Amino acid sequence: MLSSQQMARFVAHGSLRLDGIVPPEMNEEALPFLAAGLPGIPYGTPVPEAYPADSFPRRLLQIPEVAGALRSLVGPDPLVDHHAVHIRQAKEGNAQPLHGDAIIDVRTDAFDVQLMYYPQDVTLEMGGTLSVPGSHLRRTNETDTGRYQNLLGQSRLVCPAGTVVFVHHGLWHGGRRNDSDTVRYMFKIRFNPTVRQQLLWGTSDLHTPAVREELTRGFPWYEQAAGRLEVHNRALLWRQLTGDDRFDLDHWVTRVTNRPTAVAAARTADTAGGESS
Ligand SMILES: O=C(O)CCC(=O)C(=O)O
Ligand SMILES: [Fe+2]
Image (cartoon, rainbow, N blue to C red; front, side, top):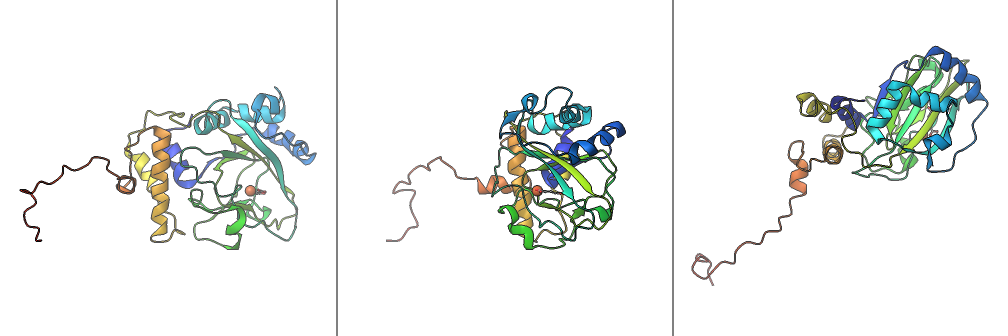
């Protein structure tokens, strides 16, 4: 299970990285398995149907750190939205434009996660996945962000074999150009939740200061003003994730949701003094 601090970090960054958690035997097995290609899976297939017991993806999902993170983020019994093997060919000469794997999707009360598994050591030259921390809650449409290059604070994944990264469906990302002589593999599975995503993680640290510290974190590419909207968006998401509809960061959600319904008592002639005719 993730802690509240880890969940808050995911809400701020849009990703969670687990380095080298898949054992070497499985990473070795993965390379020919992924190179052979996988048939597609119909949208919305339950995990046990998509991946029979003992199949490679099922065993990947049973690794305790993977299972705990998935359970914390989307809950039990998620559905497989789709999966794909993403290959960056050796010396292939181009990169994928920055994109989110969705049309505009700014649900404030739910999200999908994508598991990205890297069976090899990924060096800087090998075209690891580029991602932009804190970009996942912004209203953009799929690859419209492709015109942005080299955002300050972007992250180019360099990782040991067996690394799994979970990303929020809105995170801006893209496969980098592979300048090495090695083909780079990545296995991606997108999951849809089937339960309300509320308090699904280890919550004993829910009210510690570390949670707010994570949630208010800024990123260097944020604009002075619009960057604050991301913090506002995180407060909205945290309300949903915790069920605490009074949670706020710097009173922003409180202000913009303030629409009182109480009606003031009508003023009588006596108390309306001061008004001139
Ligand atoms: O290959 C990668 O690193 C990313 C691939 C990807 O994001 C995609 O094709 O949607
Ligand atoms: Fe993508």
